[in-house]
Length: 137
Image (cartoon, rainbow, N blue to C red; front, top):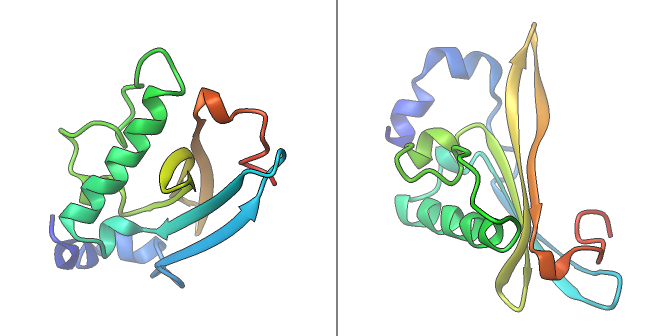
């Protein structure tokens, strides 16, 4: 679906707020003096181009390949699932070292009773970067 079609989805508009800040970056130094930049995208399926969404999916896939023996069958990795729909209600934070993705968290907004909750979702760190406090510097 196009961004406009997603915005016209009445059910989603009832519980999902607009991104307060669509994208931001946070540099930090981890255990062992690793210089990392965390790039965060709020609801990228609502505002990013198809090319940018494909790049996010590629970064997540790269981390997953080096985190586990096989890439999980999760929607964020499945190219058969419409990226615009998949990322419309998620916050994606990707950690980079030297412009290479080394970890991510992919949280999801969910309706709960009269509110919206943020499920902490899926987090993966490349094996080579585990134990360096990337997820909690």
